[in-house]
Image 1 (tube, rainbow, N blue to C red):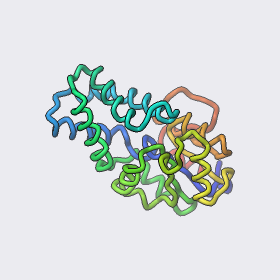
Image 2 (tube, rainbow, N blue to C red):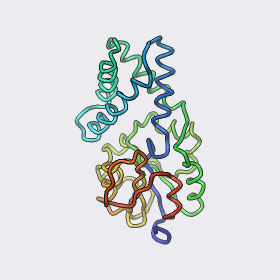
Image 3 (cartoon, rainbow, N blue to C red):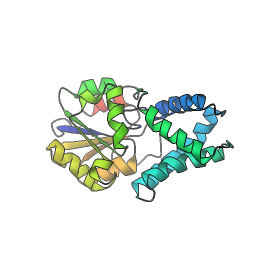
Image 4 (cartoon, rainbow, N blue to C red):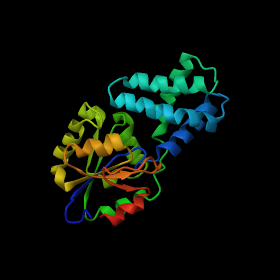
Length: 229
């Protein structure tokens, strides 16, 4: 579908290529063990994951700061799980989480295979809302940095997806116009609708099988990308 049209492919990182859920679980497991915090990890994660997504949405919308995101997602999740934790311990967990998260290197199933498939014929790039200090570590520790020519993050751009300025920065750094570019990501709001504002082609990696839509083509597994490219 995009052969002969697209020359450059831009990927989101977390939840699209880098397995955020699995790596986050391993990170919390390590932290709770080190800090001797007794907690039902799976029960905590069921509470934490939607709260984390809620705060990332607020962060994208400039309604909370990076510091508020890091504190409140833990405070609210631990309170809801019935775990008694003071603010000093929250700070310890938050700092350890940022320090350890990028040391785990699981990628989404099929990620490396599809990157190997695409690399000979397309220029590959990353556009991420993640924090600058850990996104590069994630890419390198997962051994996928080598696939990407341009990596743009929200702290570098000064705005977050879906703001068109971050997509414009990525296009400029890659030296490619939007009509020759394809954005692939898991977030309909941030990745698909954000990129479409500038005229990107888009592909929605709907791995969690959220509600269907007609904004663009939808895939549920990364290897489905090969059908289009």
